[in-house]
Amino acid sequence: MTQRISKSKRFFMMNPVIQFFKFIWLSLRILVIVAGGHGGTRKTTTP
Amino acid sequence: MSKIVVLGAGIAGHVAAAHLRRKLSKEQEVVVVSPNSNYQWIPSNIWVGIGRMKSKEILFPLEPLYNKKGIGYKQAKVTTFYPEGDKETHKPFVSIEYVVGEQKGQKEKVTYDYLINATGPKLAFDMTEGLNPGTNKAYSVCTYSHAEHAWHALDDLIQQMKKGKKAKILIGTGHAKSTCQGAAFEYILNVEQELRRHKVRDKAEIVWIANEPKLGDFGMDGMLMSYGSNIMKSSEMVEMVFEDRGIKWIIGAGVNKIEDGIAYYENLEGEYLSETYDFAMLIPAFSGHGFRAFDKEEKDITDKLFKGFMIVDADYTPKPYEEWSVQDWPETYQNPSYKNIFAPGIAFAPPHAISKPRVSKNGTSISPSPPRTGMPSGITAKLVADNIIDIINGKKELHHKGSMGNMGAACIASAGYGMTKGSGISITTFPIVPDYKKYPDTQGRQLSKTFGEIGLAGHWLKMALHYAFLYKAKMKPFWWLIPE
Image: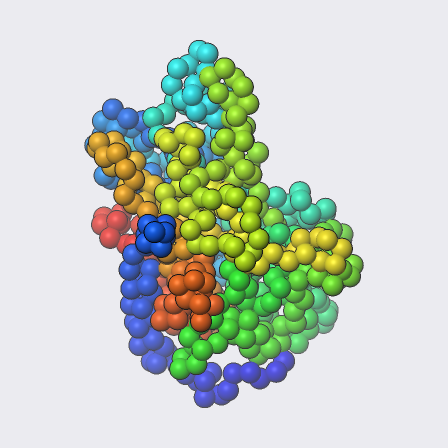
């Protein structure tokens, strides 16, 4: 086992208060990306 | 009046049926044909496989819901397609066979005006010799019953480890062309955390085995992603997590045979090797169901409908990897020969892989097949439903389009269960199929929409999605406000 995640980073990853705000931010960011629309590819790129 | 028949009640089939029923008047008939009696939220199977959730928490029976909502339901499997009808029946129909109750074994012709084939994949365990869930100490988490079985075996091993037994756990893909590496990735991290929780981590050697050429390929050619203020490859992120958790890995491995506690594989170097284990969870290859189709003269026209999976509006022209483009990928999931047949979700035949094809020195193809997870399954099912509704309402063209080359996806990979000790790796990617022409400097992806995050919030997010999507699937009030 090799420590690849530093103690401070691990604290950030597992602190419930910090992660609560991260949860809100992640939810919104994912919603924007996923619900932000989808479409075809052929009309826009094929002359 | 139109009759829409939906084959399959997984994520794609259920989403399509639900949207059709909500948006169409009761004069239009919606019928679901599925051999399964339950809807299951597949992404939570991994938690059943570590004993932290019960099957009943991830499933519900379909028939009462469909009865309540006015959706017809036949618990049966489809066997044959007749898209022109036959000599006796002039409407198109599918031949089905009931799988339970008094009707078990009975066949029936189910006619349709529009057909949605959402039958998903066949879990092709038989493509790997000796791979059969529950035998040879190898298990699966592809269904809730498989996952339950896996947990019983893992729990038994944990009890033995508590008594001092040293064990080796092998998790990954069970065939050279498997896909769905993400599920195995989640499972290995969850198993690792559970071993720590049971205080037997030091007794176990955990090994990842996969057909990926690099860690973090996930069948999508890997990803370049933003991670905090850095830009990182998905291979680097997975390597970081595996090293931090003490998980070893074998990649470029095409597992070809399973014996009791031994997995035989060939690697990209052409070496034939084996790996022993005390418990394995290996994802099988996915294949089409082997359906056949006939025209009205009962001539075999299977190749008009199927190419393994169902043929849709993709460009299936064989071409080398360098010439692949996002334009090859389908937009409407409509069969080109029979315009009233659609295949969203996993049921459509992809034009080619997403990952670069790789062949071992012996000529064996060892590389992941393209993944099509829950989110694109739901999105493509909804757009197919919307297009059918448009056609019924008199529109001539299909306005709703959704190519995987112009669609984002989120993969919230559980890395351990627990409200305070849990963890998740949240990855979004846009587009799913990399567009190397549009985003040439960022490996085909838009970096602002392709990112990774690791932490407790990821576990909460996966839990939130679990409850939100089960709420949505149960068609409770305002369910349609939850996006696919």
